[in-house]
Length: 139
Image (cartoon, rainbow, N blue to C red; front, side):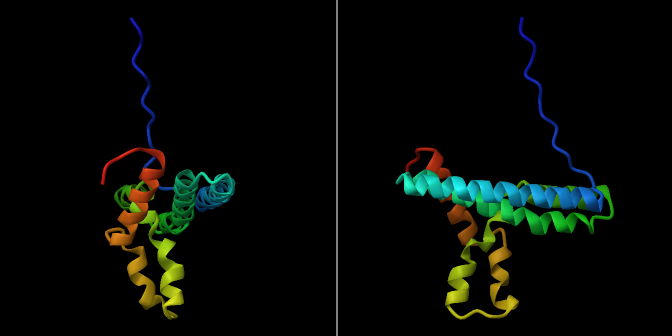
């Protein structure tokens, strides 16, 4: 009889500032790697995969602001709430629309606030497009 597959346990607690800085640096390195991989796929005309990897890169960059919020987590419950956002694709991908908003004339942060709303339509659109680059589906 085979033993059950071990379950990975996700961390949900608070972190020290140095650990958060390490996490931010790791996310940025990973975002850069994913963007480079997306560029390679684009050059190979593998457009769905390129888009999906670019979306993952955007999500990695989106972790930075959330990891910074862990600095303000004063207890386990507030830390858990931030970790839920870190693990939510839509909570991290909102800023992909910043170029469109800026090119339309937005110059104040208030004009861009909707970009970080994880329930905004554009966050679902990018998540759907990312999924379509990896999986077949019917729309």
